[in-house]
Length: 369
Ligand SMILES: *Cc1c(COP(=O)(O)O)cnc(C)c1O
Image (cartoon, rainbow, N blue to C red; front, side):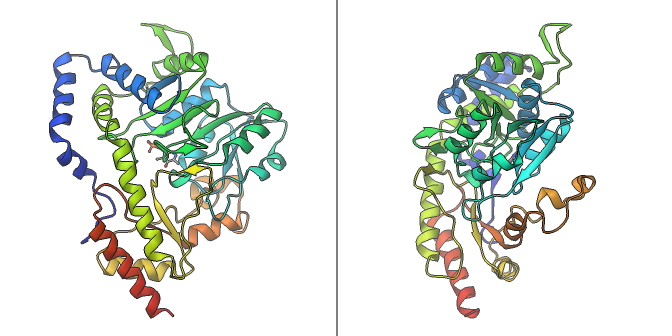
């Protein structure tokens, strides 16, 4: 590959000194579970997200699972989810014993269509999980208004939206809880698995702290059947360093996205759509074309990294075969799965790389005219 899709090692090389210092601080502290490193990152990340509380956990999937469990969602309950998302959104619901109830997404924003929520609500519905997919905020006001009317919780799956803004306010505390993944490839990524939940609800934050720590507030006294899902202090300390650079990296992504839009708008390719109230953070730059498979081959042959997010929607995954879905149940999501292609974006990418990618796509389009 001459241009890689992702380069997780590049940030370590860029920030080696700061990161090594943080590592040594934790190692020398002798505290390897929770402690100051975790609470420091939690405080800083809560502030960054304009939320009152942040609870660090082991992964983005656990963040969703613990948020659902803390809101007492379980067997017999239903939770409305988008049909097009990374499967974790569905798996967290299933792992509580509740059922994910998918609704279609908008073909331009890729996010949950708020006007389909009401028809999916039953006596058993307890919550809605909008996903801010690809770094683009979902239409929260509409979703929150419907949820309020039907007394449903709103858990935002913000795993791809670190720093994104909805109507000028950072994602993090619009709904009852927002859940975060710090998987290495995310806009704010750890050097391993990590996750968090942000919320303005002090009670919920307290329940989450107990749930992540074996259901225990006081050692060997267990008030609930909790999990072992604590944010690792080494990851917390490293994340604290990276958090200081997040806005710069997001600005760099914005510049690349702008260059892609300017360079590709003349071609027969559907570019990402950004509603006027959204400030996305471009976790992914996703184009759509019916010629996706041949464009992908063309780019790969040219040495340009690319990925498909995601080739198979959750309802057609083997993991959900017992739920009885079939092809055609969610045609918009299925078309998206067949047409999307993610171009490289991130701090490892230079403007020359960007021009090379645009040129390569232009040559492909010409050939197909
Ligand atoms: C990455 C991701 C998750 C899961 O995060 P992990 O840290 O990998 O468990 C959940 N939802 C979405 C939308 C994601 O992109």
